[in-house]
Image (tube, rainbow, N blue to C red; front, top):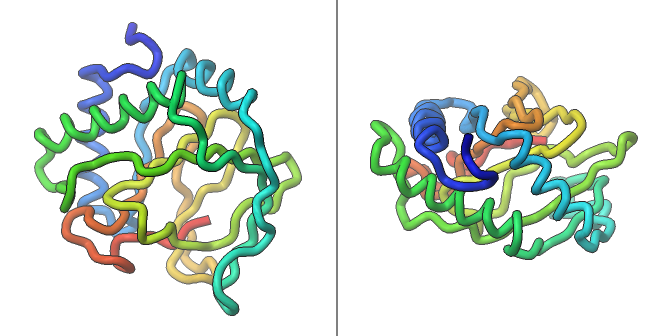
Amino acid sequence: MTAPLTISEGRIRAMTTALDELAQSEMRAVSVPFFSPDDIAALIRQCQKLPMRQAKPRVGAEGREVIQDFDICFPAPRDRALGQLADMLEDTVKQALERTQFAHLDEDFILNDVAVQHYSPKSKGIGVHMDSLRYRGLVFIITLAGQSCLSVCEDRDGHGAKAIDDTPGQLAILSAPGFCGRGADDSRPLHY
């Protein structure tokens, strides 16, 4: 059994497969089994102690506003379990890139932000959006508990929505600028 939140051969293989799939995915999003119950438990223990604030209810330019109905800790501290997670993901991606057939990044991969979000059971979630251009290469989404409806879609009205498995234990990966030579808009999937 792998120690919680550490790099392992199994995780490198899973990431390699996921990056190859992402490189070929028209959705620009994939999901892979990645975390053990011990990993999830360690992350939950830390996240429950973080100071949270209510997210701005609406963000974005007029006509492209995004509804946000959640609490957030941003930036989340890169220490303890969250620090182990960030280090493990960076190392796993680096090793997976040496094995992948299709995927590559335009620059060295580092996690430049860690955010923790809590959605109440009656939350409206987050509206259709693209992640910021400052996120480079890959974006990871990790659900620790509960159920969500993470989906990618074709337009800001949510047409052509396709669900991405982000149940606890899964690692959802979205492409970002610099992944496989993709530019700003063709790399970032609309999602909610």
